[in-house]
Structure formats: C-alpha cells, structure tokens
Length: 137
View 1: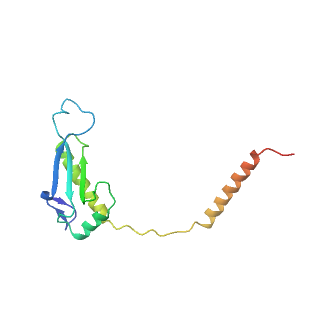
View 2: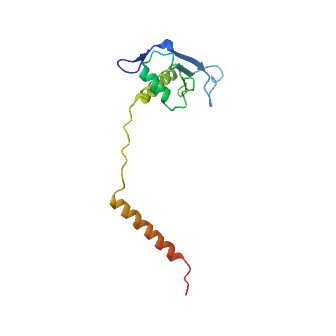
C-alpha cells in the first residue's frame, strides 16, 4: 500500500509493476537480470479521491499519457527492490505536486531607482558607442 497522506492511500493491486532490463553499460550480469522497473498507474480506475484525479488529469507532465495512465521507469539502482521503491516514491511525489495549490503571482512594478539605473546604463552604453565612431572634421 502506497500512503500519500493520512487519509489517502493507494492499494498495491492498483499499481502495475513490470521488471525490464536496464539500459546503459553493465557488467557480466547485464544480459541475465531484469532489475529496472516499469510502473504504470491508471488514474481513472484508481481509488483516489476525485480532487486528486482532477488535479492529475490537469497536470502537465510527460509521464501522464492522454489516456490518464502514469508511466514511470526506474533504473537508478542495481537492485530490483530499490528501483521499485524509487518508482513508488516518484509516483507519490507526482501526486503530491499535482494537488499542491500554487500561490497566485502578484504583479509588481519596477522601482523608481531600478528604472533610473537602467536609463543610466543605456546612456553610458550609448556614449561608449558614440566614442567609437569615426571623427568627422
């Protein structure tokens, strides 16, 4: 069972794990063991609350397909169990980040001092370029 917070959890039978061979360079066991994990989680068929499901469908993440299936590939470690735990942790982080309420941006104006400094820089740069010109007698 994957615990998201005190009241929300996902049973293990709703998460599909598939062991695959990891990419990259390896040693002697590279062609014999499948230690990477391919996690897939169907958002619509899950027991998550509707607010969580809506937030996940609205989230813009490349790991969420248009069908509403989250696909995570974990191959950081050499151990199958460590990669499984890593995939579950990444799924939990994705769910928690999607329900996070972002503070609205408050638009601000540039200060008078910053505007003055900007204009001074522009004037100084202009004078520098004028000094490089050919002198006309």
